[in-house]
Length: 437
Image (cartoon, rainbow, N blue to C red):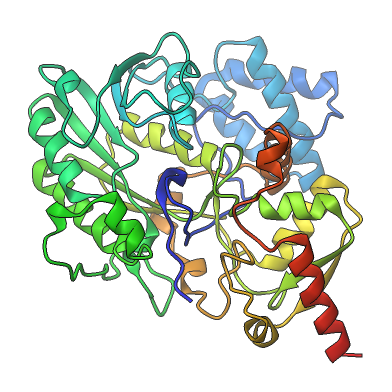
């Protein structure tokens, strides 16, 4: 099985992952949805902490470190309330220096989250895209330039920005063409890549692992249509070449982020959404493989916000970005979603051998789960964690994703883009129970 993680939901393919870990005492705004049982004393205690400058930050870190999970959730909710009442977060160590940010894309999956977070941090944001996806959705403060990465870059000429964030690029020619216009006019280039650059790794890759090699005739003549026609086999190699293209044009000024499976509200691929939707429907749910099979994924909002903070800190280099911080498994994911949704679903675990016999594929038919080819679900993210990558709780991602999906037109809801249909799931479960009766 070859899983390919495709960026920003432009393609319905796959390959990466992450979930509910929270790193504490990181000096960034924190907005967690959590328990509603918040007391005035907790809010008052947090507000008092925030008056103490850096000493207050360290004090809050000690407070969080000493509490159990239930108390931490209550405190997190209080933090969210306190942050609404005052200008900065309890964790805000300093106000970031305002930047001018150009986001190539900006209207897909992660882009709008980048935009809104950047604006909330006091930055000036410009987007560049074709103006066809979700028109009118971005805040009025955003300067929106219209063009096309396939040759129409006029709107970018003779303009200057502090940082460029390149979200949608798969083709090296897109990086080259944009760089020819932007070189000398931007200070840093952030390229959003993918862990698909590692190909079929035999062990959990870190940033030094070899990347896939392109074996086509000319990477600069590749097209999106050709990538699709290849069954996305060229996706990882072309992303790797695009990384090198960015580094060539902006040496020492390039930040490369390699996300895993990006999940959450707005994900049009349904690669994680399948599970909250299916578990919410309850009944007998087909669970793939073994409960301790590893999984990884990252909420799009966590990825977007961390990307902006990395740009603020002028970081460069290569970082894997998936999660959670500690090893996580498919059993924990399914149980966590069930608990978040208060579902009475019952999981029936079906081994991989039988699923293979039934032509049920990891990743596409059983989203997030990678089966025996699990190296991609063991990606090393220690570098990103050392730079403040944080994760909201799994239950927040699960509930928000389900609420978003239920807000879509009924026609869209009735045609999920990943996972087994209800009829096919019932067939496989019936066959499994017959075999084991």
